[in-house]
Length: 82
Image (cartoon, rainbow, N blue to C red):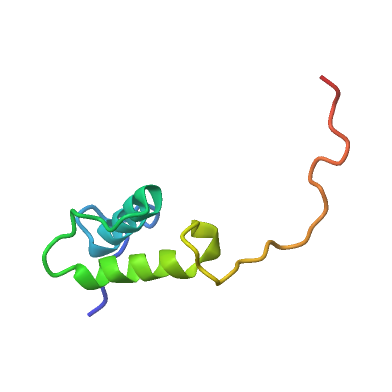
């Protein structure tokens, strides 16, 4: 049996563990604190979100894993003057 993640192929399902997991991650990212609103039985999802934030340097919480940007040309090399 597979888990349903999306309601319509685009939006995370309402009431899904995945949507709540993303909310735990966003809450922790914005406050830099553990989410106090974790549903019972979903502590492992909150822990995964917290560990991800602690590992990724771009989250601003002291992580060491980096995501390098793809090299490319300036998409607006010659913008119109104001």
